[in-house]
Length: 510
Image 1: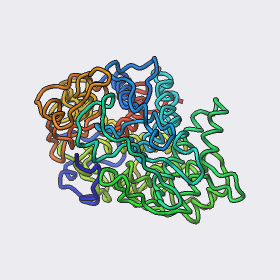
Image 2 (image 1 turned 180 degrees about the vertical axis):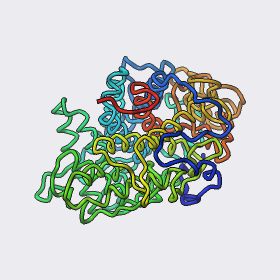
Image 3 (image 1 turned 90 degrees about the vertical axis):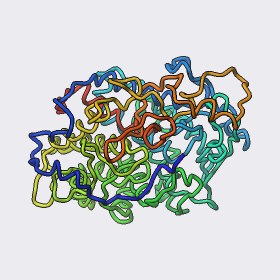
C-alpha cells in the first residue's frame, strides 16, 4: 500500500481547467461536464444512508446490537492489553486494520461539524441519530486514549506487520502494538486534532451535559492560562509525530492543527484566551486543500463569519477563506487546482476523492455562511456569489455518484455499475470461524489476488477515485483507485444531506 499523501502537484494548474474557465462568476450557469450528458438525477437520500453505513463497517471493538453490517463482528478486543489499558473501539481508517490517530480524529471532527452545520437536513432525512452514533463511537475511544495528563495513545497496530497479512480484522494475527505521544515524544498534530475532535463533539452532545462536559474537560486544562489540556500539550511539546509515516506523514506541519483546535475551543467556550491565540499566535496560510493533513481552510471558513460580524482581530480569515474558493474554482483568475476533463477536482492520485468531498463540504458550509450575512466571495475585484459554490459542490458529488465520463458510480452498492473490488481486507475476505488460524503468507493469494468481486459488500464506501484523466480501474490491487477511507465519507455526509433535503439547487430553507 502506498502512502496516503504526497505534495506533488499541489500548485499545478492543469490545462484541463481551462475548459471551464469561460463561465461567468455569478454562478447562474453550472459548467458543462465534458463527455457527460444531461444533468443527472440521483437518489441522494439513499447515497446519504449508505455513506453513513460505511463508517459502521469501519468500527473496531465490540459491535452494538444495532450493527447493520452483518458480515462484521467484534474485533480488536484486546487492544491496549500490552499496556494494561482499554483501547477497544475507534475506527480502522481504510482498507487495513490499524487505528491511526490523526485520520481517526479528523474523521470525528468533520462528523461533528457536519452534525451541527446540517442538523436540520440530517434530522429530516432520519439520519441525525446515526451520525451522532458515529461521532460517539470515536469520542468514546478518545476518552480511553486520553486518560492521563500529557499523554495520549495515538495508534494501535503495527502497520508494517499489518500490511504483510491480508485478513479481516476479526481474525487478524498481527501485533496490536501501541504508540503514544508524551513529553518525550511530541505529536502536536495528533494532540491538537484530538482536542478539536473532542471539543467539536462536546458541542454536538450539549443536551447530554455530563458527556459533553467530560469531553470538553478532556480538551482543556483548568489552569490560570485556560488553554486546553491536549491543546496546551501540543503547544508546549511542539513537534511532528513521525510514528504514522509513511502512511500518514504530516507534510503540512502542526500549525494548521493548532489553529484548528483553537478555533473549535473558541467556538465552544468563547474564552478570550483562544481568541488571543487565534489573533496573535496562530499561523495561517491560504491553501487550496482541506484534508486530514491540512486544516487551514476549515478553520478559515469557521472563523469567516466572525470576521464579517465582529470588530475584533480576526479580520484576515474571511479573505483567506475566499482565497481557498478562488484557488479551487476553475472560472477564477486565481485557480490553482487541476480539474479533470470530466470535471472532477484532482490534487493527486491516491484517495483523491477525499479532496472532492472535502471541497464540496466546505463550499456548501461556506455558502450557507455567506448567504446568512449577504456577502459574496471576493476573487480580487470579482465577486463570486454563493450560488456558484453550491453548483460546484453539487457537480463534485454528482461526479462520484455517476455524472462522469464513464457514467458509473464510485460508491459501493449505489447507482450504475458500482465498484465491486474495494481494496479492503474485511470486505474481500470471507467470514471465517472465530479463532481461525490465518496463514499470512497465503492470505494474499487466497483473498487479495483473485480477480473477482468481494464476497462482502462494503456498502456506501466511496472509492479513492479516478486519476487525473478520469481513468478508473475496479481492481483490488489498484489501491489508489479502490481504497476507501473514513474521512472521504465523513465529508460527503453534509453535502448529501443538503442535496437530499434542500433539493438540487442546495439553497437552504429558512
